[in-house]
Length: 383
Image (cartoon, rainbow, N blue to C red; front, top):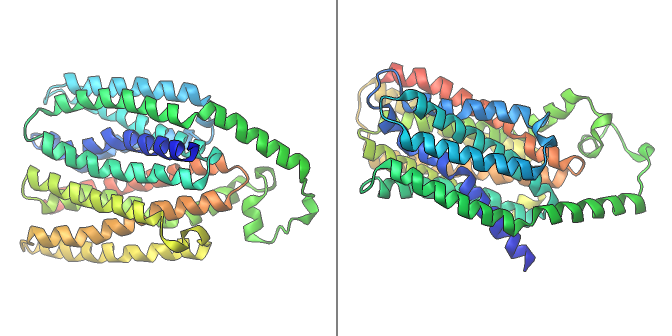
């Protein structure tokens, strides 16, 4: 029973953590339409840079803060971001950008905190976080697309605030995180007392053993380098998700409606990638070589971007149906990378698992920024 309870808790937290973040994606085209030098990439860049700074600080400082205080801060950020976006006017860029910045910090701090917290749970329970975040992409773009046809975006943000406050609280209640941390810490302490492992039994030349030994026996550089290499597939996935989503999606869309539909389709494919990635038969036995070879799947996306760039330069109109189909496969690959990497880290980084699970975001957010940074001038150039 508790297993189902924890799964539902992670599902709700993943969904609510990313929901407003995704809604900004859908708003980005309309928000930037009346401003000459603002485009979706620039708005999303604003949504990512504060989060990147948050995730850089996370493994150094923020991880030391009590989970309870972090969650209280998340609620305050959500309230601040929603109110900023609700009261802002189209011409008031300061309020709009402030709201987006608050959304950014809320989402990225929430992601790092929950991933760290997942180290105190079973892997079968942790998987539902990635399913929830993928579901947020599909529902965030889909629900906004439908509601925006009949009600103002400000009302949507007000509704989102109420849903967040209710269901994020329910998710935390279901996890019983304070009790769980105490139980797991006691289990780990008991296990170490009963089965001490002499240091001389470790083979320091073995790469797999190096993953498991305490941080005091590794240089900080080696620790970060290993994590970076083993997250490579996910890092490239994040770069492409944002580079495509906020450069090529608006370039290939002829209207705000087409843009919203294409965001919904790509985020739906992203969700199915994350969902199926958790249940691919070999995912539980995944090795380092599989993680790094997984990067090759992204070559397909690079290829179609080259093709579309040629069409845009030559002013050749591509049927929207072909665009939809081509990007579905891209976002399936992008989505699968997420559970593959996190399942690998969860399984192989037993020592300091809480730190490792929460630290991948510093790489993914940097490459997300890189995707938007390159996407913004390219959009202006090809536009």
